[in-house]
Length: 105
Image (cartoon, rainbow, N blue to C red; front, side, top):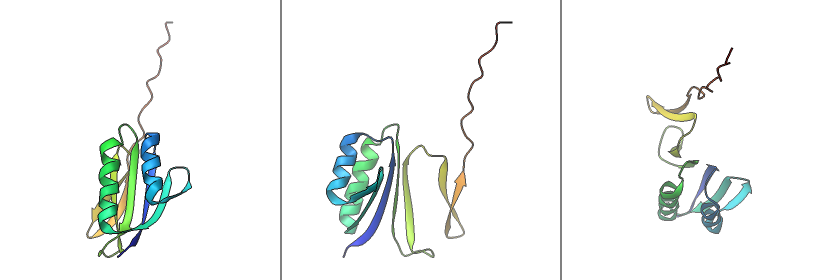
């Protein structure tokens, strides 16, 4: 049985975007939506996690949870899903600090 999935990508290789577009539609740059079986979803996610590199990706799919969906992430993101008594909440991490250049005076 097919179910809807959403995959959001940031700074991933072009060949990964091409692979995802074989099974889903890229509705806006980096956002892929489709209806696939759980097996295809898991295989797509395995492909994403293997080549995400320095980029980031997020998968949202139906699940038997209180919210009726689950979130998976790969790569480094500022928004991190956290389980809070059975609910998935999003925690924001601090932005990386930019080193200030020291003046020679």
